[in-house]
Amino acid sequence: MAKDTPTNIALAEEQQARLNAARWAEGEFVELYASRRLRAVEAVLLERYREELSGRVLELGCGAGRLSGHLIELARAFHGLDLSPSMVDHCRQAYPLGTFSVRDLRDLSAFEEASYDVVVAPFNVLDVLGDDDRRKALEDLHRLLVADGLLIMSSHNRAYAARTAAKLRMRMRLAVGAPRRPLRSLRSLPERVRNRRRLHRLERVENDYAVLNDEAHDFSVLHYYISRDAQEAQMAEHGFRLLECLDLDGSLVRAGQSAGHSPELHYVARG
Image (tube, rainbow, N blue to C red; front, side):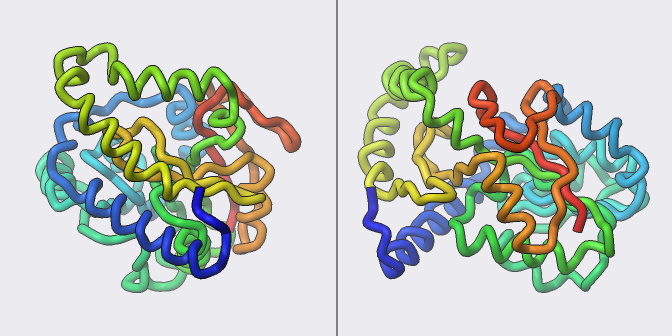
């Protein structure tokens, strides 16, 4: 684990940002994410906030449009952002009624104040950022939302990562990879091991959050993990009022609950 001096934290966050950006900008993930399959909680949120989503919607990390197609059907105007040119090109062809652009989450300065009714940040996209950049992104999102605008986002659940079962799963995935892709998993074993050795030293555990090297894309990225209550407090610091937190099944997670069974949590907040 990296020591938690301000200088070391700043350096580690810069490394995290560069590593994650380089990985996600690659064009190899289009086929993997080119579907319209919703998780249970996403279906709940699309229906519950259907009225708000009928306005101007910005999606961060649109990927290959897994969620974008559903949002475009609801929104009066839709804009999707992604770091990967290949992902954006795919979305432009697959969803011509939406607007898509290549942009880094760390720079939202091109968007005008109060230009969106809803911002959607799905699939833990803000977790690719370090703590400082993540907080700046929340500040930017509050600026570009209308008064009482809606932020719908998800984040890795720190309580899940702390469970023994989750740690055992990580070790199993390191050893055998994805069970449904045995041949590819066997070939990628050396890469997984190299990535894990290289990125483990950049992991960091702080009072309010952790940055962990998880199994995503052969252990090649670092992600931000935070608890339900810490995320609510962080949102409040940047002008958001939490309306609800849901687990992956769409069940309510109340204040003080860890929801350790759910690897990610979904948050809905007013700006």
